[in-house]
Length: 245
Image (tube, rainbow, N blue to C red; front, top):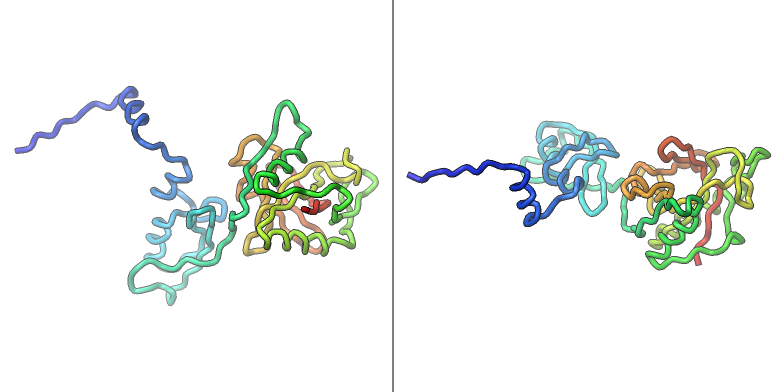
């Protein structure tokens, strides 16, 4: 008869295991064990999705790996007799992935320089301010007012660069007054991709935390002649597009 030997696990034992075994990040762990709620910002793992899909109709978001999140809508007639389901329809494609550069205590107002660093990390160089495309008109109190006549041109330029795999720096307004020459831009961020529902993902250097600065929740959306978004408690409105060389 085989004997089973049990060893008491203590902190020292766990530390020894950690030295020899790989430590998974939260994202990697979730891909294995799940834990997502199925929302766009907290997608399910593929394993969870397969379990859910077998129980009937389903509508939610799935982490397909490689930085791609999918929205899946399944009705009863879509369910296969057996085997995994084919998941299509990316919500956010992170193929444009600059090296994140964020907030520095010794240079708190260096947001534009951080944006330039992010573009430089993928071989892109932005032009000077003379090449800016305005998306808004400044008001007397230093806010973004009505949409500029070049709004469509600016959006078209962003789309053109993203289609070419090139990120784009844009300025945003979020408070009265502005130190920039256009009298409305308070901050700069980098647009890195699009979502299938019309959103534009951006990296925000207003934080030193990469997970926050590159979060999938950092999205601009277009309504009429405005491109707006939110970062933490700040409401952003895009003011200018900085062209690339």
